[in-house]
Amino acid sequence: MEKKISDKVINRLTLYHCILDDYINNNIEFIASKQISSLLNIDDSQVRKDISILNNSGKCRVGYIVKELKKSIEMTLGFSKTKNAFIVGAGNLGMALAKYDNFTSYGLNIVALFDNDTKKIGNTVNNKLILDINKLPNLSRKTGVDIAILTVPRNYAQSTADFLVKAEIKYIWNFTPAVLSVPKDVQVWNENLMGNFLQFTYKI
Amino acid sequence: MEKKISDKVINRLTLYHCILDDYINNNIEFIASKQISSLLNIDDSQVRKDISILNNSGKCRVGYIVKELKKSIEMTLGFSKTKNAFIVGAGNLGMALAKYDNFTSYGLNIVALFDNDTKKIGNTVNNKLILDINKLPNLSRKTGVDIAILTVPRNYAQSTADFLVKAEIKYIWNFTPAVLSVPKDVQVWNENLMGNFLQFTYKI
Image (tube, rainbow over all chains, first blue to last red; front, side, top):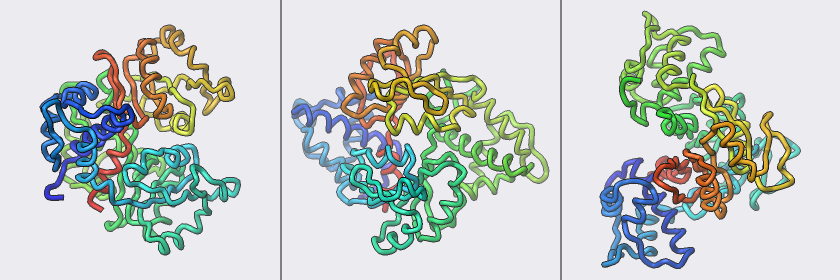
């Protein structure tokens, strides 16, 4: 990648990608920037500007070639490089994320889930095994997986994060509503649901 | 609220709020901006700047008074004004969100869940009833609830959105990986999980 792409642009490009996916499923070959902008209720010029940063050659008189544009987004955002991750916490949220088939097409591969509930251990969800949390450090070292998706209850968030840090996990996608304390070399991405909700609703 | 607060600031303020919550649970009375900034791995000056936009009077020699600062954030972001919402789709994700107790303390009240699966209808989750989806239009009109949290499978996303629009739902918090087509007077907030993940990982 030549230049740093801003978070907002990455976010919009993944939404364009969703739309293109739908178009392909409906066998539609071309798309105009206005079709994208009207679906997302944003400015048409914004869509054209975002697309201009891609190495996209699929421009034609009636718009963009859907398949080419989709491929350009995938190249730019690096979907082709698969990232392996563990889900830590096989409750409702962990199960939901394990079933979220869209992840795979964006290069995120869930290797396994982990829990400490013996009733869950050994079960599979979406063809992924639920393993004993104590097996995580060993499996992480053997497979090189260093991304954990944290979906445990809030009360266990920090102690589980400490456990993951010891197991040399380097990236934590935190779905718990707790702010985690971790060493500098571990990166945490807070999936701050309430923050997102408030951005949406604080004017209501 | 006097001035528009940017999305990034709202997002950070909710994270500060989480930290303050933890401090209160641990009976800690004061907090320095540096404690917040180091937990979130951001600049200390950023934290002080964010706090300066609040109507916060709880500043003292050793930092901020935890309880006062928490209250200031709540006032500024309008947590006190409860927003009622329906969860549409009682699968794993819908169930996880219904159990997400943090919502209540941020002013989001889940009134009920809806599904079309007769095996689920009539059950409760976290004291909230799962109702027949066909009852939604009537209940929405009777209660005035106009926020829907959409957690149905991707294939049903658009048809369910059409149904919600007909039922006069005005705000859709979309957790499905589909881009929805809705009339101009309906607002959609895409909880774009893949976009968030890629912001976090595209440099890995």
